[in-house]
Length: 557
Ligand code: PEP
Ligand code: MG
Image (cartoon, rainbow, N blue to C red; front, top):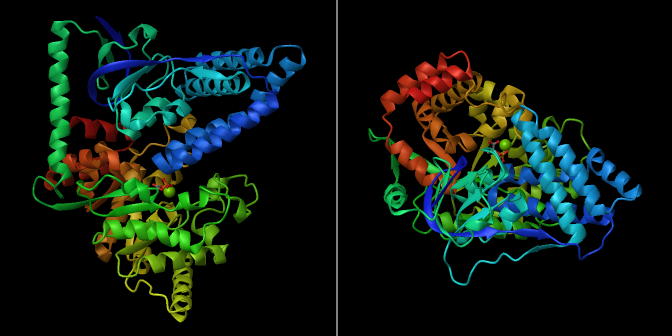
């Protein structure tokens, strides 16, 4: 028996056979460094699109970081210089990526250490492209699931596995915020990372993987088996309790009905969820239609995609968010010049309103798809009332044009906004008069309140949802919405963060919208909460002075 200790990454306890993922970099192909960088860029962009549609924007950002590195002269320049001075290309890539990452690994700062992983991963990717990489890895025949162990799993490797055959991940490298962990969480499997003693000898052995304690127990003895079998059973019971929750509506302990909807990125996200009870789709990000091909999607293509979702969820409602691109995610046919500060630039509703003909096409597709269904149209990045009133005018125009063509349109669709900018949050009392509903986009709201980029780990201690400034803003919006009698939901990541369930309920939130892998955990959490104690908790956290105090209050409960 070997008990390998690592870092608890993603939660869960599983037992199964281990497959060791071994990737050897050969040197059979020959390619210039420019070509290898170009091909790696293509690969990374494809992975971005796959992650965007399978796992959402935040996970896809891992690949934008790789893209930036591949385009960074500070990284690629020294490699080229070494090659010009006579080094073999693969040696130059190893030398530069290893030395740059070694410098970063010595830093105290977690963000910089994380960048060391990125540099090594990107270096390996270039070498694989330069020289050819052999991974003899294939899943054995059948449908059995396996624990994948590896020295390191790049996000590309992780994305390429058949997710239905995965029990969990164990890796020698990586930290608690590594990309393997982020991706494991979104797939819904446990992960243990940073296991120093992990090597290929675990291949084909039986093992327990405990994502709560960070232990990887290989070839357990009888004594240990007993302990871990108990943990696996407890985990299975927890998962089973989620099975009951899965088939029921969500209620708090004291009987208040709370809606829990799901977030999706494309129609196929709804495949296989027949037995899952959920309160409709609270956020359908429509970007995939625009970013999955070079061409602008036709009205008909959009109509088909929206209708598929509206039909399959009916009689529940579907909240479709109009196109939210621009800034850091460019789409060629929008012709947005490169911006100094893209997160404060021409994105979301601003971009749509400055490209009205493209926006009109989306509105038409939405209005057509919503005929006789429950459609809610949601605008992203709203900062001014004018953006809502102008959209309403365009919607009326689109409706009239369609009616003249004899096309049936939605008569009772609702129009609402994401509350994800400080302007809309501060003015939520006024905005409520112009909207049928609010959905709070905490991912962006936190970044704009705290003035800290949501994708930049150098400021991740500042991008902190526990900060009282965020909590006060959430409380204000939820209360303003309730006073105006409109529906308020949260569709950003905070809705799926169990630390915030009680606070949000205590503030009066009646609807959560979360990624599918999280829905039953959140429904279970809701069922364990009493509204009266949740309200007490809110009073306490709202009087806290900083995030540490908030965390202390939450954790003591
Ligand atoms: C948000 O900002 O919280 C949100 C849900 O939108 P996105 O993550 O797509 O920006
Ligand atoms: Mg957002």
